[in-house]
Amino acid sequence: MIEIRWRYDPDADPVQRSPATAEEALLLLHMGNRAFADLGRDGAGGQYVIPVSAEELGIGAGDGSAIPQTPMAVVLGCADARVPLELIFSQTANDLFVVRVAGNVLGGESVGSIDFALARIPSVRLVSVVGHTGCGAVKAAVDAYLDPSSYLGLSANLPLRGIVDSLLAAVQAADNALRSQYGHDRGDRPGYYEALWGCAVVLNAAVAGDAVRRMFSPYLSDELAVAFGVVPACSRHRTLKLWVRSWPSW
Image 1 (tube, one colour):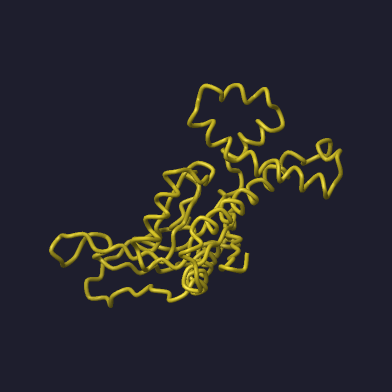
Image 2 (tube, rainbow, N blue to C red):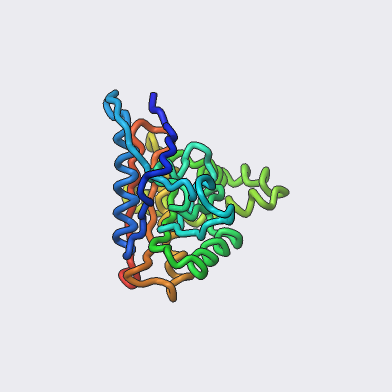
């Protein structure tokens, strides 16, 4: 069992997490994710301390007014309850500006939220799109792609249909990639469904990351970059695979 323990120390020094560049922000996420993945590895115990100021939790001295937002990164992730982004990155209150929606798709609300963060919160150094294995939204898109008749069940559910529609391009791109690698009979091979599903999860995160880069290119510099990645859901070692692409390298 992994125990998460809260401890309040009013005399502790203030917590400072203010990366100056996108690379520094990315490194902090990598280090936090590695610390999270190492907890309980191979049955061993251990602990990882995540300092957070009392004010960031709304307690301690002060006049009761809200503190400014100072996240180092904006993270677009899936709404799946098995993928708690702050825990996965070993971050805490006011470290991440998290936007979560099924399939980590880019809709109007999520794009507007990212735009707000980039325009109004100067501490942001990174925008990251994080998908996860076993994504149910991507699975629904895979099912609709392989069996179009199953799509009829979504025809009257416009919100859910919109999510699936947003994911179909990534599924088709994944199928094209598998076809190019393994031939046109790839659908008859064992494990094809799982391979298509997993490949589509990665491509969906990559496509969303590229779209974010294009939409918000005026903001990007050495101090603000875009990344994408995929994390295993409910696996033993939940280490994120994260790739950064700083403008204008894409």
